[in-house]
Image 1 (tube, rainbow, N blue to C red):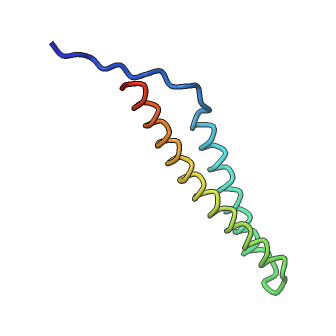
Image 2: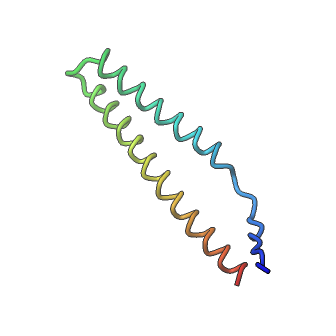
Amino acid sequence: MKESIQTPALPDRPSWKLRRVAIFGWLIFCVIVSFYVIIFGDPASEIHDSALFWAFSTGAATVFSYAGFATLEDINLSKLITRKTS
């Protein structure tokens, strides 16, 4: 007869659904700001350049942190599961 392996109970953590809503909401905001500045902004002004720089920078930082922290959480969860099953 096959033995069933039970998955250990994991600690309560914030839902990834809430994190995704925050991340995608921020990325949509960055895109809206970028399009607004590109379409209606004055290309000669430094505020125009600064707004585009920060919109793209925070968007890129958001994507990299989302992927990086997801990887770290996966590593921590796999260590936790390995410890509880051994």
